[in-house]
Image (cartoon, rainbow, N blue to C red):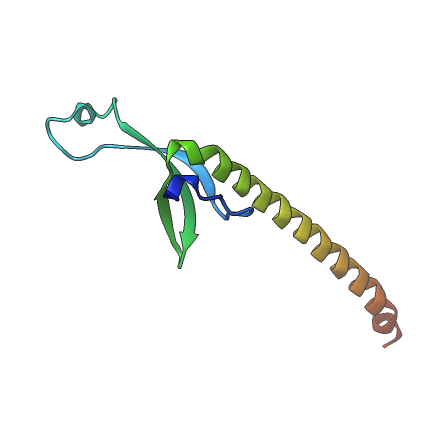
Length: 99
């Protein structure tokens, strides 16, 4: 099984984007600063630094979908956490008024 035929995890933290850059070779077409090299990458933070993981073109769509699922799960978790905080505040409010 090759690396591109492996299934993509259901949830992936990060963002899929097109990274544009110069390669540094003086004779390359990108040296003009306009015709830059493009690569589809997964951008994510690790230990306070931004990292890029180059993605094969055939995996980009699946990884993008996994990052969208991650953001949706995170938003749902945030909503549940806020509801729990509101419930706890309501439970503790009478005790705070009584003291």
